[in-house]
Amino acid sequence: MKVNKNAFKDKALRVPVVWANRTCPALVIEKPNRWGFELKNAIRQIAKHFPEYHLPIEPTWTGRNDAGEEILVNTLGRWAFGVPGFRGRLMFEGGELRRIVVYYPPESPPELISMLEKAIRLLP
Image: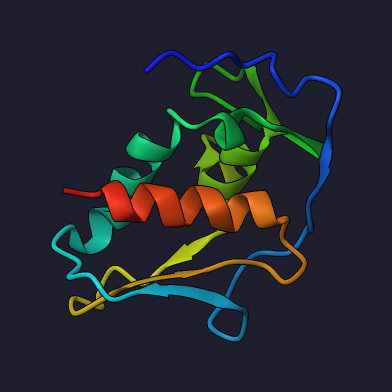
């Protein structure tokens, strides 16, 4: 699926600066977690194909790759899942095998929840 990354160029979502933890709101889907601690990667691989993943955000941050080059954290997907040198803001319960649990920071934009729900439902 091809995504037009410029479709939402003028709309920057306001995102919280805090990380998710077990006291934060959670998205709970009654679906067996057969990915274990690779759950985050499985969800991210699907979510990358959604327009919400590429929505611009504010504020923005930077991460760094192994060569020391900056990686701009300027989209909802990069903020949520992280890049090298920047920890994503979501928390995944990889050890929970009976269901899928993803914690997200309070005041996260609704586009994040929508993206996560769609991606989790598409997990094989």
